Image 1 (cartoon, helix red, strand yellow):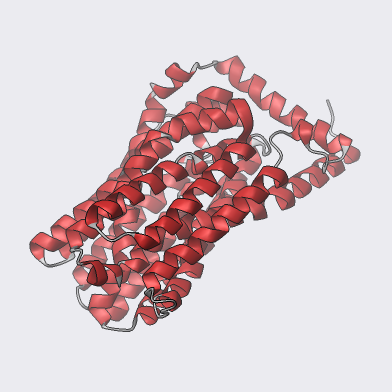
Image 2: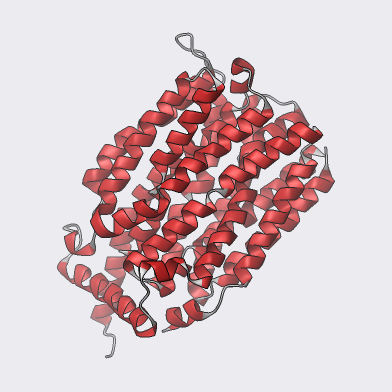
Length: 433
């Protein structure tokens, strides 16, 4: 059936209206999520001295977040697919906002561990729910760009959050030190936006009163065609999808990628502080550079992946480059300027892999199978966020140097890239169809 100028005009209007309606708001929610997830790395510049926590305690507390996160990843994604994404996102945000504020009032090691675990459990499902939600609104050929725009909140939250955290660490109000205000002031927006989410987001195109009738019909038809194309190749049950070779490879690739990333992300302010001896504000500004570079490269890689239709190399190559560059930072040792440059390149390469990576499950799985698989990849993969900071903290305390820990992270990133290259080509055939 030939495509008329009128059809193209409707398609352009619909894509633009959907993108402007959903992506800025989801971006903002993810900024809030990552500020609340990673504010512990800035608090670690001040909190251990106040509470008497050692490197190993702080590393375990940073990582234990992901044990709670692991438990509810798959159920959360399935709830979003079968019930209501907007309501579940709203519940998640209100819960983690309250618990982040509670974090400001901990006194003991076990309180630290418990609240971090509960914050992780509260936030579990947010990211896979959003990835599933994007598949309700964006075609496969637009999905990497959509993921890139949403995921831009990840690196930019550090760009925003690092100097903000540096400033908040310097305040002392009502007898509370800066790190406590950091948790209070960064947890409060999650509660407010959680309430807004329940009214602002729309679960499905057919419910979107903000789309014109022809725009609703167009996007519904496009997504229906994609679903039919997947079913013509093969229709997977949830359990078949969870045992699929490529899903398992994606899960382990994501685990090792996040092991490398969170090991760096949590310890980077501390590494730069000990290398430079600069103030907390200057250190957090320097720590923001890898994330600014990551945002820029990520947008280009997502655009290029959609343009070429290629996913595997667009995910694997950035991971391999990130690992190789991190290995050079170990060689750089105490050279502050070179270390900052290399960490910036590591961040640029690491964040570039996500847009192409997250299009793969939806390219050959449909509905609940895709939702469960995304939940599995995200929840198991995020255990790398537990392993990375923990192993780094252990190796730093044993060797009194960051070299051994960074070498471990190098291996994790390179292994992730190699696993990505082992993924089969079946999903690309479906995408081409």
